Picture 1 (cartoon, helix red, strand yellow):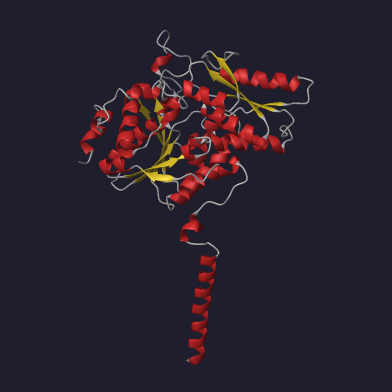
Picture 2 (cartoon, helix red, strand yellow; picture 1 turned 135 degrees about the vertical axis):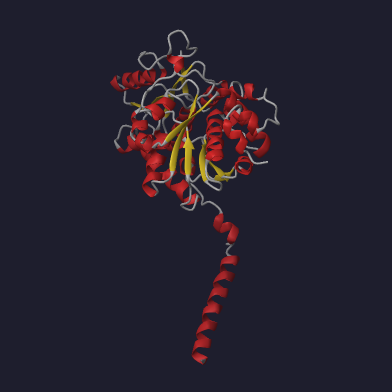
Amino acid sequence: MDGKYQYLTLIVGTVVTTYSVLRCLGYSRRSCLLPERKECIADLIGNTPMMKIRSLSKLTGCEIYAKLEMANPGGSAKDRTALAIIREYEDEGKLVPGRGDVVFEGTSGSTGISFAMLCNALGYTAHICVQSDTSAEKIALLESYGADVEKVKPASIVDPEQYVNAARAGAEALSADTTQANGVFADQFENDVNWRIHYETTGPEIYEQMNHDLDYFITGSGTGGTIAGIARYLKEQNPNISIILADPQGSGMFNRVRHGVMYDTVEKEGTRRRHQVDTIVEGIGLNRVTHNFLEGEDCIDDSQRVTDEQALKMARFLSSNDGLFVGASSSINAVAAARTALKARKGSKIVIIGCDSGARHLSKFWKEALKVDRHVSLEEILGNDKLIDNIIH
């Protein structure tokens, strides 16, 4: 008995001594939770927080969470893709820091901002081709980062002057030049690196943050990389997780998922206002199928179409009730999540992507959202949807 007592005393004494030493060295429970120091801004990308949207959760009886990709240093999930593409080109020897190399990309804004930030940090120049109707905030951010910004008119992908094609042409021209500097085309829509980085990082993060317990994952599709990578990973972990694509008006992705046909009524001759997607929303929605989308299409179970009006109202609702100031794509995801929750089993767990901040959308999307009454209700957001009878009060 004495031997056991001495053994236990020794263990307790060792634990107490170790704790005291760690306290003296400045360690505590709080300090153990603090992030480690990083070498550069690229090291801050990923491991973004997961936040419960309390207002929608209370009203629907489900647990609705937002994976806040807006917490990345460049303000969106595009940071992951941009860094992965740069690293891939570095591994291939096509990008060398300090040589004058240029990364060309065609983007609605967020991917360009990520490239502009990372090119500054890693020793390159970003040349970003954007549609001339891109929000002023995004263009200002690009210019503030020092990116070469080339504005082109909105056009179909078959037009050689369309923003993606313009970026490709710029990279090819620089690569063909006799100067030492090289140009690379990021090609986010078709680059296989896009979906893979979300399969390797974002998907696993979501699964772990939800303690391997979620029922639905919802997000939109622009390049298709985010939904494809996350969907593939989650389905491998649990095939019963339902993947839902949230789609803005004017996009053909809804019909692609629901009916296997890439078509929308705004494609009718003489009915379109814009060349790509007839919506105020930037960043998601498309009328063509990309390589990245195809990599995860088989994992997508359903799609929800969301109108501009619903997205504007939801943005105002989230800001007023949760202090969550989001952009258009996040609002669309939230509308789809609310609809899904109202017809799901009570207590179901739903995760959406919180894509970017509303600060990037002040002059377009939020200019209209501010016209919405800040006390707008979920019933008013969903309109005549028969699901409003399921809202909890």
